[in-house]
Image (cartoon, rainbow, N blue to C red; front, side, top):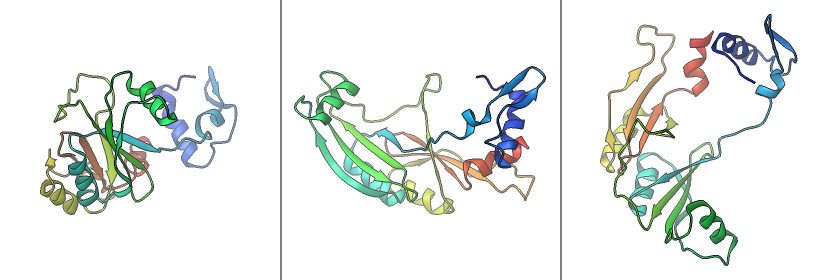
Length: 203
């Protein structure tokens, strides 16, 4: 099913108004879709995986600067086929990955952050915006100034000034800023939820 930009507004408005289970909705004269297939399937964010250059420094940064909590601290993983985890790692990283260190952290709302320190690795990530794939993740906080200060204190970098999406409209206070961890991985801060930030633009 293809949802065009012309009917996205209608879908989003219906979803926000509790009509996500209505079936066979007429979007235009030529197209009918089942909203149930779009909105009612359960899909939640579980975790993100991040490559880092030094595990001890990474855990320090993500806990002290960003406030994440350690679930499983720095653990060594070796290449082997005897265990299910070993076979899983070979399936993911391929033969000859030579092992890595891993740590599991969580945000205050339970989203996981999985840190990897590969045995063979770059020491710093250089963002190439011409490449496909994920280039940043985003955390939500009401303490922009505190996070920015701690980011710099623990080896990260602030890439821009704090900006508002609608500086001319006081009823839309959502703001954002881009930063880097100590290894060059980009992350963003939001002041509001994703839906709160963008919903008003589609009404």
